[in-house]
Image (cartoon, rainbow, N blue to C red):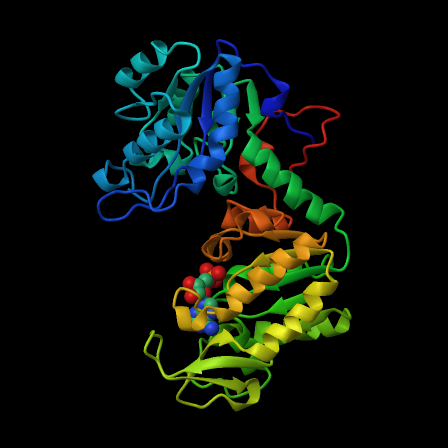
Length: 406
Ligand code: AMP
């Protein structure tokens, strides 16, 4: 199924409702600590301005649970966007209602208006049709550039599309679908998945659904200890999902039957506590002391994973190799980021599936050294799992178009 893209349309004079992802991190003084999500929406916003369209931006921020919460206002985003565009960005007092409609109707060609947090209304997450209609009534064209929210059928991502006839993917959305779609449909091989993070639970579907697609699985992070437990090893006080031990056994059995390469760490950094002052040691996976926990992969594992990654032609990475938020346990995660940058330079396609691994790549200053860093952690996982994203399916279909949604 091909989807209409913003590049297929001219927005001259058109009131264009754009769903962006301005769910930005703010500190206690409401300063933006990372403006990447705003920066990434610029190509779409600039295209509408250049066409002479009228930009009406909408987004959620945090979880205000259906009522206005001052700390979750999008005002800081309006200010930052205005600096980035070098022009005024008007801020609406709400996302629907008479005052907002008035502001929308007074927009001139090339003007930009940001609506207040959609989740100040619980109708947004409920995909309430009256609320979706109110949003839709403001505009003639709808553009979805919020890939990170496309796996949820909310009023601003799905409901609204029922009441506007032209619904297009923004540039950021298009980029996400292009890279993730290409990785899924026609990967250059060997195709390697690097999976980490705290829990098996969030990624189990990905592992199973991708069994047929990937050639090699490299598993690190907290989730590896449930696999070790399933193998009968002593994991000390490392993270364990008791109720997933049987599942871990099943996965290992399935990998074996299908002849897939699934590599787990051979050594790890253990500590007596999770702190910068912790006492740490590097031990083989078979020698984890009973009063310590594994918090990062060790140097032998890095070498083992590096050898696989250097042979890879396509890599998808999701989840850190250790508790990289604490410097002492960040080495494994940063090493993977470095290796991915190196193999990208050698021609491999490297995709980072959002969230913590994307933050690690950023901290390492490697944002531009990998092929694609997805903006949507959950959405990119669901896409890779082969699930249909409601926010993408809902966009206008275009025959003969190569922009794939599944
Ligand atoms: P997830 O949301 O499942 O991708 O998990 C990300 C979190 O996993 C990060 O905050 C890491 O600190 C954490 N993590 C990674 N490795 C470990 C580990 N060995 N033990 C505990 N937590 C870990």
